Length: 280
Image 1: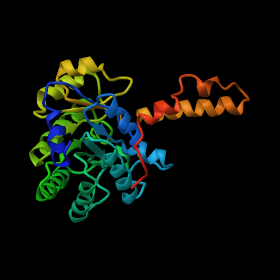
Image 2: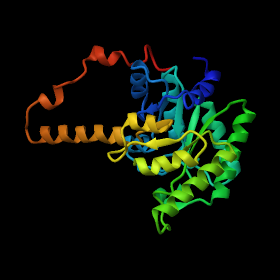
Image 3: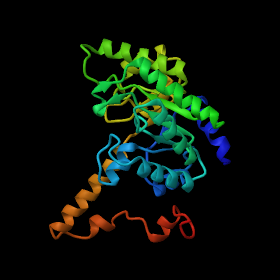
Image 4: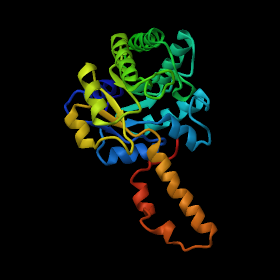
């Protein structure tokens, strides 16, 4: 797929009537496996990338490290890639735009962009976040790219609300302000129950992204409700890490080899998902 058409392709996947399912990845082989299995797009998870490198989420790894990882993932597949760019690794508008230009250089088609500090505990004022979204849209347009902006609203995580009703009202206010500022999709992270999602679907006139977890309604129910996009954050990475921990425990206990070899892919199986030739 030509690089120039990837943002438009990604955007269209939010409007074709089907749920866009994004099992977030953190490395090129995960991206290539998704592509081989027929997924139409790839999404990174900032927490999974950071944790796989031994750091916490929340912009604890260097911007250069994030950009290099994203660039490797983008180069590894032909389908669009949307990158979790946290809060942009910046506080000022000028620095944000400079970072977005560097991100655009990787070839990404879209971004997640969040509106909180302190792991979601404090929310950036709505008008301030809207200005940051406008700045992203403006600098991307100057590059001739319709970067697909998935604007995260962290109201369900944040402190300072007395009731669910207040949180929902804040999510709706943020979602609509972010849409007006240029966001293509909104991401009210933290809730997946049918009652809440029904309210949000009625009151948010744009594609909605939901985070899948144990309490989220099924993928089929999400599609029936009119939700446009579902992602998995760092949960797939952490599930695989749990398996790795179990393997280490079994080996340390002088156990058998079956926990390592049972269901293992062969070298030939793995080669299906590898880039051919030397790294350039």
